[in-house]
Length: 117
Image 1 (cartoon, one colour):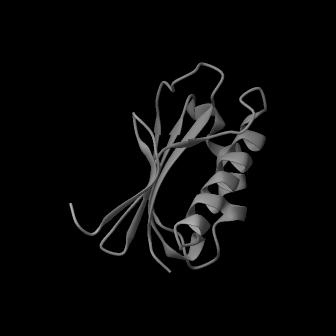
Image 2 (tube, one colour):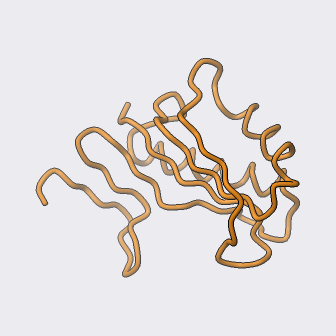
């Protein structure tokens, strides 16, 4: 297990895992699940920013992102926030799927892998 660093370790998961120069974030959801898709997406991405910074990385070092939407009807609105957030020229490999999330009021969740800065 040498070379693996886990941050904010809980019983079920670690919020950040670092290994061989890569940063793995646990799934992030909105700060306020009662908000609309745009606000949920923005606060979710704000949390990603904070975790990447804590892990010694940033948006420019994202390698991949998997986005889970409760309903694909929100795809365009989520993308409007995403497109403004991702720095030009640094888009990660990305997948976006429709999925049931942990709570019905959650509209979006993201999982990110990044390189250390």
